Length: 427
Ligand code: B12
Ligand code: SF4
Image (cartoon, rainbow, N blue to C red):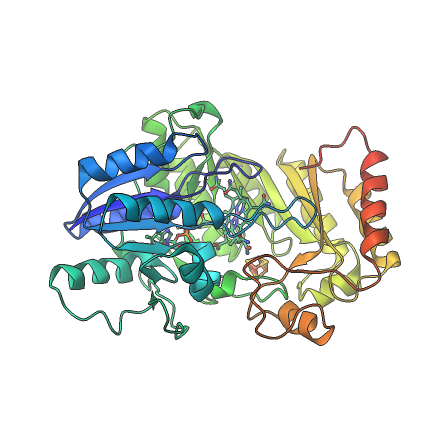
């Protein structure tokens, strides 16, 4: 089958992000003998025209769209990112009668809603490699499509059975220039290449949608395969990587093995990752520094013991401090995040969070007001109980939990806090 794969992230939200998920799909379809072409839609006015030209040249039999982001998770400056997906799907349909299939992390969280909103013909919710290839085979054979895990069909409520990949090593990682192309106007030197070694997260933070995207069982690639993939990108001139795993340091034994593989097979690589601030001993911090880790996102979200418990975090503020010091001792830069206004938030807990952030002395910070409500999370239930949303309300257009009565005060408190730290870098 001839497959055109289209990245729909036309907005650079905070940071340009290369299409890793779509790259995995490109590598997968190629490994199964299908022909593919990649197209990065951009915000340039002629992007849709260029897309239509590509469709006419390539004559795809299937068009796959990656809907990575639903929104920017920012209540104060909201961006709804499914609108471009809808425009791109419409342009595809104008230029071709081939079916439009939508997938991606954002799509997986809201499969029925996004399929209906965007006008796509089909969707694949979950990790797409196996199911999308199965879909292509069935289409080629003109066979019935029922029973494919993750398949979403317009007008039929999704059964919730996500597409999954049990053995990650059975599927190839994307290669530079072939499966992952950098948009022409991007500066190659400033691009952080996303690399993923694990999928899933066994933890269950109260607001988090990851379990509904990748599941709660952790699946791992061989560390050597991941490090070899990094080296292949380095051979093409890339130097900076982002390890896109949900929690780089968990489990620590795997994280150490990955560091060893990177040090041996990809010397000189510089990278960042996301840390769950617990279970990070000095040996791991040292291994990370030796393997090229330059900075981490320290995912603590709050500085108040009770709020951390409400978010179902398995650490307290002192553990965060300990991990932060340890990373600093190895010259690993850190950005920190506060997620304010969640269930049970009070003026006192916000003040504690600010004091905690001040005491950490991080390199960069991001303060989010209000918790984006995702389906099938504890925060969803808390929002229903407080009357913030109605059960079964369509929350594709973002809805946020802000503890009732705190909204205005929180806005001013955050503004004051930021103004009182003119030298800090707020993301
Ligand atoms: C790592 C990460 C980041 C890193 C990215 C670093 C980098 N250089 O790539 C950083 C921290 C910079 C980041 C930033 C942001 N992120 Co982020 N990020 C992630 C994370 C943890 C992993 C993403 C990833 O690379 N996965 C690995 C790839 C292989 O998986 P995948 O993309 O899902 O692809 C698979 C499937 O989706 C599917 N698929 C994908 N495309 C297609 C296409 C077709 C046709 C098919 C059939 C299937 C398919 O198959 C793929 C292979 O199995 C996810 C959470 C998660 N676990 O999904 C959040 C996540 C995607 N991010 C999210 C958000 C919101 C953001 C930001 C907007 C935050 C902000 N306000 O700044 C920005 C957006 C940046 C941008 N320009 O797009 C949200 C999106 C939800 C939403 N509301 O939109 C997520 C889901 C986190 C969350 N829990 O809410 N992010
Ligand atoms: S550790 Fe991260 S990915 Fe895992 S549940 Fe918590 S917020 Fe989600």
